[in-house]
Length: 92
Image (cartoon, rainbow, N blue to C red; front, side, top):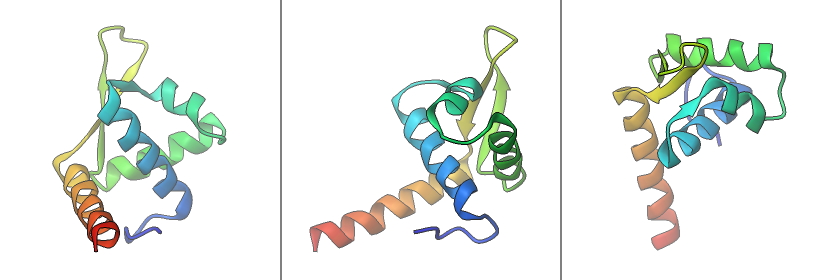
């Protein structure tokens, strides 16, 4: 369920996918393109919106052709709150 105001279901799905990928290892924008069933241009629009909301940050990687995605403190806080709510539900 999308509990973030100002973003649609598509952006929310991209945010959750990025969060999952970033927790496992450093993630590039190209890896996000490959992992989701959206066009690259659509994902770029979603990523820009997530950046404007300060949920994620794009950094140039070691290879300048690829941008690495990082959660911001705000993005991490939202995910931590979401995980706490989920844990409360399943541990009740």
